[in-house]
Image 1 (cartoon, rainbow, N blue to C red):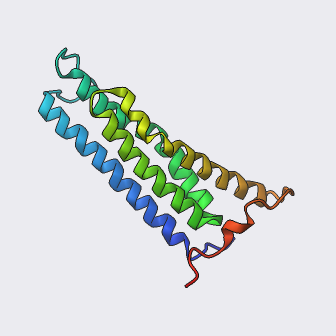
Image 2 (cartoon, rainbow, N blue to C red; image 1 turned 90 degrees about the vertical axis):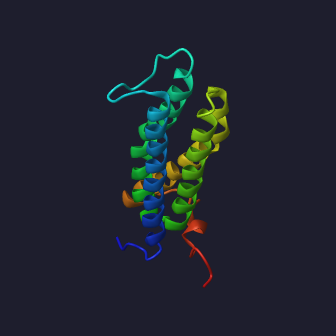
Length: 154
Protein backbone atom coordinates (compact mmCIF):
# COMPACT_ATOMS: atom_id res chain seq x y z
CA UNK A 1 0.00 0.00 0.00
CA UNK A 2 1.22 3.46 -0.86
CA UNK A 3 0.43 6.34 1.46
CA UNK A 4 -1.15 9.11 -0.56
CA UNK A 5 0.39 12.59 -0.35
CA UNK A 6 -3.04 13.84 0.72
CA UNK A 7 -2.50 11.88 3.95
CA UNK A 8 -0.96 15.13 5.17
CA UNK A 9 -4.54 16.32 5.72
CA UNK A 10 -5.07 13.37 8.04
CA UNK A 11 -1.92 14.25 9.97
CA UNK A 12 -3.01 17.88 10.35
CA UNK A 13 -6.47 16.79 11.46
CA UNK A 14 -4.83 14.62 14.12
CA UNK A 15 -2.84 17.63 15.34
CA UNK A 16 -6.02 19.74 15.42
CA UNK A 17 -7.69 17.04 17.53
CA UNK A 18 -4.83 17.21 20.03
CA UNK A 19 -5.31 20.99 20.27
CA UNK A 20 -9.02 20.42 20.93
CA UNK A 21 -8.28 17.84 23.65
CA UNK A 22 -5.81 20.27 25.23
CA UNK A 23 -8.38 23.06 25.11
CA UNK A 24 -10.97 20.92 26.91
CA UNK A 25 -8.35 19.90 29.49
CA UNK A 26 -7.49 23.56 30.04
CA UNK A 27 -11.18 24.31 30.65
CA UNK A 28 -11.29 21.57 33.31
CA UNK A 29 -8.15 22.97 34.94
CA UNK A 30 -9.63 26.45 35.02
CA UNK A 31 -12.88 25.10 36.46
CA UNK A 32 -10.93 23.25 39.16
CA UNK A 33 -9.49 26.54 40.33
CA UNK A 34 -12.74 28.48 39.98
CA UNK A 35 -14.86 25.90 41.80
CA UNK A 36 -12.15 24.74 44.21
CA UNK A 37 -12.03 21.08 43.18
CA UNK A 38 -8.54 19.77 44.08
CA UNK A 39 -6.74 16.88 42.42
CA UNK A 40 -7.25 13.91 42.40
CA UNK A 41 -10.95 14.51 43.06
CA UNK A 42 -12.78 13.82 39.78
CA UNK A 43 -16.12 15.43 40.63
CA UNK A 44 -17.51 18.06 42.94
CA UNK A 45 -20.24 17.44 45.48
CA UNK A 46 -20.71 21.15 46.19
CA UNK A 47 -24.45 21.82 46.11
CA UNK A 48 -24.08 25.32 44.65
CA UNK A 49 -21.42 25.01 41.94
CA UNK A 50 -20.73 21.30 41.70
CA UNK A 51 -23.08 20.72 38.80
CA UNK A 52 -21.30 23.21 36.54
CA UNK A 53 -17.87 21.78 37.34
CA UNK A 54 -19.14 18.24 36.85
CA UNK A 55 -20.60 19.13 33.45
CA UNK A 56 -17.29 20.69 32.33
CA UNK A 57 -15.43 17.61 33.57
CA UNK A 58 -17.86 15.21 31.88
CA UNK A 59 -17.58 17.01 28.54
CA UNK A 60 -13.84 16.44 28.59
CA UNK A 61 -14.09 12.90 29.93
CA UNK A 62 -16.72 11.90 27.38
CA UNK A 63 -14.54 13.23 24.57
CA UNK A 64 -11.60 11.20 25.89
CA UNK A 65 -13.79 8.10 25.95
CA UNK A 66 -14.43 8.31 22.21
CA UNK A 67 -10.98 9.66 21.28
CA UNK A 68 -9.29 6.26 20.68
CA UNK A 69 -12.00 5.27 18.17
CA UNK A 70 -11.65 8.67 16.48
CA UNK A 71 -7.87 8.37 16.19
CA UNK A 72 -8.06 4.79 14.91
CA UNK A 73 -10.60 5.66 12.22
CA UNK A 74 -8.71 8.83 11.30
CA UNK A 75 -5.40 7.02 10.89
CA UNK A 76 -6.70 3.89 9.17
CA UNK A 77 -9.62 5.22 7.14
CA UNK A 78 -7.43 8.13 6.11
CA UNK A 79 -4.96 5.79 4.42
CA UNK A 80 -7.39 5.18 1.58
CA UNK A 81 -9.75 8.14 1.89
CA UNK A 82 -7.61 10.98 3.26
CA UNK A 83 -9.76 13.92 2.18
CA UNK A 84 -13.10 12.43 3.21
CA UNK A 85 -11.76 11.13 6.50
CA UNK A 86 -10.04 14.43 7.28
CA UNK A 87 -13.19 16.38 6.50
CA UNK A 88 -15.24 14.13 8.74
CA UNK A 89 -12.55 14.43 11.41
CA UNK A 90 -12.75 18.23 11.34
CA UNK A 91 -16.53 17.99 11.72
CA UNK A 92 -16.05 15.68 14.73
CA UNK A 93 -13.55 18.09 16.31
CA UNK A 94 -15.91 21.04 15.89
CA UNK A 95 -18.78 18.98 17.28
CA UNK A 96 -16.79 18.16 20.42
CA UNK A 97 -16.20 21.87 21.04
CA UNK A 98 -19.92 22.58 20.51
CA UNK A 99 -20.77 19.63 22.78
CA UNK A 100 -18.43 20.87 25.52
CA UNK A 101 -19.66 24.45 25.24
CA UNK A 102 -23.27 23.37 25.63
CA UNK A 103 -22.52 20.96 28.46
CA UNK A 104 -20.42 23.51 30.36
CA UNK A 105 -23.48 25.71 30.88
CA UNK A 106 -24.53 23.33 33.64
CA UNK A 107 -27.53 22.17 31.63
CA UNK A 108 -26.65 18.70 30.32
CA UNK A 109 -29.42 18.89 27.71
CA UNK A 110 -27.46 21.57 25.85
CA UNK A 111 -24.71 19.06 25.05
CA UNK A 112 -27.00 17.61 22.39
CA UNK A 113 -26.07 20.55 20.13
CA UNK A 114 -22.81 18.73 19.43
CA UNK A 115 -24.44 15.43 18.51
CA UNK A 116 -23.79 16.01 14.80
CA UNK A 117 -20.28 14.69 15.43
CA UNK A 118 -21.71 11.21 15.83
CA UNK A 119 -22.63 11.22 12.14
CA UNK A 120 -19.07 12.29 11.28
CA UNK A 121 -17.60 9.51 13.43
CA UNK A 122 -19.92 7.01 11.79
CA UNK A 123 -18.65 8.16 8.39
CA UNK A 124 -15.08 7.70 9.60
CA UNK A 125 -15.96 4.20 10.76
CA UNK A 126 -17.35 3.44 7.32
CA UNK A 127 -14.15 4.62 5.58
CA UNK A 128 -12.19 2.34 7.89
CA UNK A 129 -14.55 -0.56 7.25
CA UNK A 130 -14.29 0.00 3.49
CA UNK A 131 -10.49 -0.07 3.64
CA UNK A 132 -10.58 -3.34 5.58
CA UNK A 133 -12.98 -4.81 3.04
CA UNK A 134 -10.70 -3.80 0.18
CA UNK A 135 -7.55 -5.11 1.85
CA UNK A 136 -9.21 -8.49 2.32
CA UNK A 137 -10.27 -8.53 -1.33
CA UNK A 138 -13.94 -8.79 -0.49
CA UNK A 139 -15.93 -7.96 -3.58
CA UNK A 140 -19.04 -5.95 -3.77
CA UNK A 141 -20.27 -2.64 -5.05
CA UNK A 142 -17.63 0.07 -5.26
CA UNK A 143 -19.79 2.60 -3.44
CA UNK A 144 -16.84 4.68 -2.24
CA UNK A 145 -14.93 5.04 -5.51
CA UNK A 146 -16.07 8.65 -5.99
CA UNK A 147 -14.31 9.79 -2.80
CA UNK A 148 -10.91 8.63 -4.05
CA UNK A 149 -10.77 11.71 -6.24
CA UNK A 150 -8.19 14.37 -5.38
CA UNK A 151 -9.11 16.78 -2.57
CA UNK A 152 -8.94 19.65 -5.02
CA UNK A 153 -8.51 20.04 -8.73
CA UNK A 154 -5.23 21.91 -8.35
